[in-house]
Image (cartoon, rainbow over the protein chains, first blue to last red):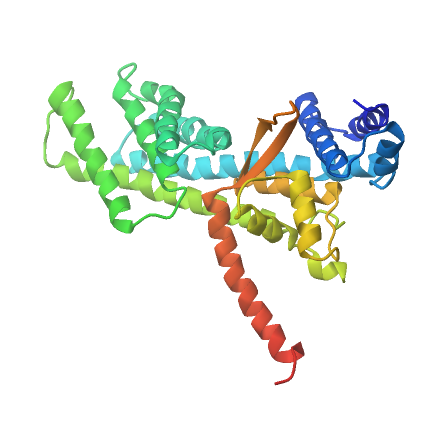
Length: 253
Length: 108
C-alpha cells in the first residue's frame, strides 16, 4: 500500500473516537477500498500522485469526525427500535395471558421471554440475513426465533413445555413475512392455520390436552394477538426508520 | 447550488441510485457527479454516514466482494423496505415540485 495512503488512513483511524475496534476496522477498510478505487480510476500510479489526490480530500480529523458522528445514533436506533418493537409483542401476549387468568408471574415471564428474547432478539439479528431470498429469510427467522424462545418453554406451572417454542417460531414467521406489505387475507389466515396446527400437535399427536371447542376461541384470540402485535411492532419500526432517515445530520459535500 | 436545498435529500438520492442495482462508494460519488454535471459533489464524509444510516434502518444492505485484482469492495443494495419508502417519498416529492412550480416555475 502507498505510504501516503497508509498515513492518511492511520490519521483517520486515530480520530475515530468512541467506536469499537471492529467498527473502526470496518470503516477504515471501506475508506481504503474507496480511495484505491478512486486512485485506480484516476490513474494514480506514483507516491506523489497519491499524495496529491489525498490532499484534495477532507482533513483526516474532519473526516473521522464525520464518519464517527452518526455511528452512535445508528447503534442507538438499532437497539432502541428493536427493544421498543419487542416490548409491544411482549406486552400484548403477556397481557392476553393475564386476561385468560394465568398467574401474574407466568404472564410476566412469558412477556419478557416473548418480547425481549424473541421480538427484540429477532430485530437485532435480522440485518445479518437481509440479502437472502424471502424463503430462506423466513426459514432462518423461524429457526432463530425457535431457539430464542427456549425461555418460553419454562413459562408454565409444570417444568419445560417444548410446544411453547412454537409460539416463538410463529412470531418469527410473522415478523419476517410482515416485513413487507402482503394481502390481508393471508394475514388473517395465519392465526387460523397456526391455531389448527397447535391443536393437531397438542391434542392429536402429543395428547397433552383434550380438544374442546371452548378452547378454540381462546387459542385463536391469543394467536391473533401475536399477529396484531407483530404488525404493530413492524409498523412502529418502519415509522422510526423513516424519521431517522429523514433527519438531516450529515454535512453536505 | 444552495446547500440548504440539498439537506435531507441525500438519503432519497442514494436510494434512487441503488434502485438501479448494487453500487460501491466511489461508483456512487462518480455517478452523482456525472449526472449533476458536477454541480453536486458528495464527499466521503457525507456519503458513508448516510449509507450507514440507511443500513441501520434496513433500507439497504451491504456486502463485500473481492475483485479479480484481489481488492475488495463494499457494495450497497436496496431492500424492499427502502423501495417502499422511496416510492412513497417520490410521490410526495412530485407533489412538492408541482406546488413550487406553480409559483416559481416558468410562466405559461
